[in-house]
Picture: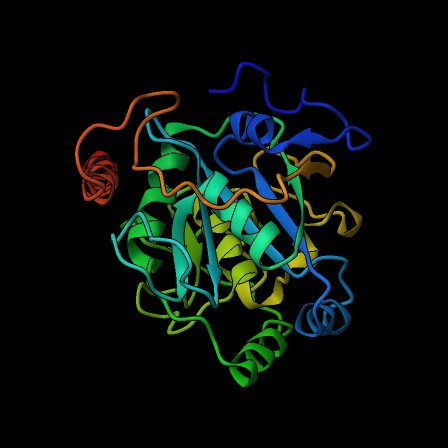
Length: 282
């Protein structure tokens, strides 16, 4: 865990350097990005949003800080599969921010959860990563149609574990997902959709909205996103990213730990953690 408790980081008027922001990141914290290309502007205008990309920090046990998101590029190795591909990916957090800032020309902000997530929520996160990693990014037409479809109300829930549905007015908690989100139900996924599915699986978001209802701007503080379980997100903290530094391509090692063994151990360690999460669920 960071040495500064969640929610006690510098306010939005203070800029954090990248290394400090990565060090302060905890599981569930949100990273937001805003670019200036025509494609970035088109997304911002279409969604009436100040940002065009969103990802989530994953900081579990002795693993380094990671970013869970979906993107069109394949600039970095996906640390779950050990390969480079487009779509839903798990990256070294610092390297991912460097790519988005320097290669894609994006500004970055960090929003922190006000309290740590539970072990049960981490388990739900790992199961979601195992299920969604590698899901392709949608085409432009698919992206628009999925976003519009998400505006149709949905109020029914389904529990993945045996036990049926919550009662009227209840929200799904960690390990529960909205009705219709079967493991193979997402043939494609964009960044905000991945975050929404993950937050819902962790019990951080109510399931009354389809994941497609969310866009990156929903996770910006101006949208007043209401989380479940007594959680909330702090304000945006601007992050200063080195202008000339590229991804270090570091092997998967713990915080401050020296690299031990080939990079292929990274995906193996992540899968082992996911298997432990599945076994704890039984």
